[in-house]
Image 1 (cartoon, rainbow over the protein chains, first blue to last red):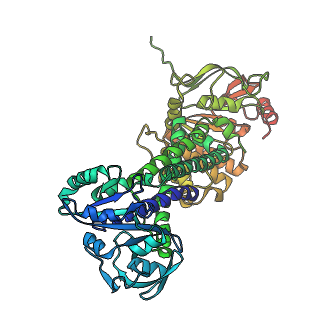
Image 2 (cartoon, rainbow over the protein chains, first blue to last red):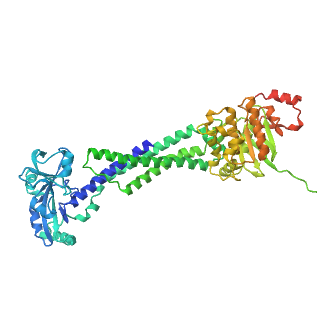
Image 3 (cartoon, rainbow over the protein chains, first blue to last red):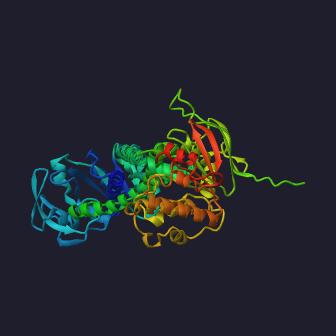
Amino acid sequence: MLMISVALLLGLVIKGLSTGVMEEKIQRTEGIGADLMIQPPHSSYILGLGENVMPDSLAQKIAEVDGVEAATAVATNVSFTNRFEALFGIDLPSFNRVTGGFEYLQGGPFTGPYTALVDDVYVKTHHVHLGGTLNLLNHNFTICGVVEHGKGARVFIPLKTLQDLLAPGKCAVIFVKCVSPDLDATVAQRLKEFAGGALKDYQITEMRDLATLITPSSFLGLRQFLLVIVIFAGVINFLVIFLALYVQVLGQTRELGILRALGASRRYLLRLFLGEACLLCLLGGALSLLLYFLTRSIILSIYPALHFLLPLGYVLWVAVIALASAVLGGAYPAYRASSSEPIAALTYE
Amino acid sequence: METDVVKPKIETRALTKIYEDAPGSPPAVNSVNLSVPAGQFAAIMGPSGSGKTTLLYLIAGLTNPTAGEVLIDGVSISSMPDIARAKMRNTRMGFVFQRFNLLGFLSARDNIEVPRLLGWKPRRAPRSIDDLLAAVGLEKKRLRKVNELSSGEQQRVAIARALVNDPDILLADEPTGNLDSRNADAVLDLILRLRADLGLTIVMVTHNPEVALRADRIIQMRDGCVERELKTDEIDPSSEWAQRLAGHFPR
C-alpha cells in the first residue's frame, strides 16, 4: 500500500506544485492591475521568460491611443543568483499609473539607479531587509523599499538600469490600462491597427484571459512530463498489486481450496481478489493524499514562496488511472485464484 | 397396490475419474454405481489408493468426473455450472476433512462463520453460531484461535462449520483419522448425535472398522471399484470378516 501511495504521491506533488506555481503567477500578473499586456510575437505568458526586444518608446505612443489611460514598459530578467526569480525593470511613474502604485510596507521608491524594491514574500524567503544589499546580474543593489506582494515580480529595479545591463532601450512587455475595462477588446483592436499595423504580429492579451492562457503547455513539455509521471505511477501500481496478489494466491493455495470446498464459487474468488486489488488501490490513494498534504507542509516550511494547488479533476483522473491499473494488476492473480483446483489445494501441504 | 419407493439422496451412475496429470494410470474411481438413501450413514472403507477420497470429492462436486454422473435428490450435479455446484456445496452439504482444514488465523467462532460469508442465502433460518458452539462443546473457547485448540477441539470446530448452513448431507473424509481414540470416539458420538437431531445423510470415508461399524452401511472399495457393500446390522462385530476388516485396513 505504501508503494502504491508513493507512486501516486509523485504525480500529485508535481501536479500540485506546477499548478500552484502557475496559479500564483497568474494572480501576481493579474495583480499588476493592467487591462492589456503587449508582448513580442511568440512570447511566453510567464513573465520573465520573454526577451527584451521591444523598443520602450512604444509605451509612450500607445499611451496616446484612444481609450488608453496609461501604458508602461517593463524589462524582465530571470535571476538565478539564489533561486529562480523574475526581476522587473520598471519606470516607476508610468508603472504606478497603470498599477495604482505600490503599497510600501517599509522604505519608499527608488533613490538611485542601483536601488531595488522587494516584496514582503521575498523578504521572508530570502532573509533580506531594508537597506540591505542584493546582488543582481553581478551588481549590488540597495534595498530601498519593501512593498506588498502581487505586482508581477518580487524584485523591481529601475527600467533604465536593467536596460543598461541587458538591452538598452528595450523592454519585454508593455502593460496597458484602459479608460474602462469594458473597452479591452476595442482597445486591443485599435492597438492592432495602431501605427499602420506595426503591432499586428504582437501578442496583445486581455489580462482577464490570462488564467486560460497560462497552462501546463506554457512550460515546454510539462504536460507530457506529467503524463509520463502518471503512466509511471500506473505501471508501479500495476506491478505492486500484481506481485502482491500473485504471491498471496501462491501462498494461500490451501485456504483457497478450503473456501472452494465450503462453497465459494469461482466468481466469488474472482470478486474477492479484484475487490482486494481495488481496496489496496483506494487505501493507497487515500494515503497518497495524506502524504501529499504532509509533503506540501514540509516543502512550504522550507520554501514558503512556493504554491500548491491540486485540481480536483486531476485527483479524479489519477484515481481512475490507479483504479484501472489495480484492476489490471489484480486480474491475473484473481483468475489464478478462481481457477484453483480444490482437490490439489486441499492436499497441499 | 402402491409401493413406497425410497428415492436416493445421493446416487452415482457409472462414476469414473481418471486424473489427467497421471496419464496411463488406472482410474481412481472406476464405474461406481452407488445409492445412499436420505438419512443413511454410509461408511466408505478401503486401502489407501482405492479411490475413497476421490469418490467423496466427486460426490461433493469438488472435481468433475471423467465419465458418469452424481445425482443429489435426482438432479445431476456433474453437468451443473460451477456456480450452481458451489451453491449446493454451501447450502446443502457439509464437509469435514481429516486434517480439519481450518483457517488458523481465525478464531473458532470465525471459522464456523466462514461458510455464511461466501455469498449464498441459507435454505432455512440459520442456526446461531453460539448454539453450534454449544452443540460441539466449545462455547468457552469460541474466541480462541483454532491453532491454540487441541486436535479433537479443532475437529469439533470443523464439524460445527460443516453444519452452519443446516445441510442435509454431511461428507466426511476420515474425520477421526488424526485423533487419538478418546477424541475419535467423542467426535463420532457428536456426529451421530447431530445426525439424529438434524436428519443428516452421511457419507464418511474411514480406515477405522470401529467407526465403520457404527454406520448403517459399509461400502468397501478396492482399485477404484466398489468391492462389497454390507449393512452393519447384518455384521457380527466378533465375526471373522469384522476381525479381518480390522486387520486389513490398519489405521
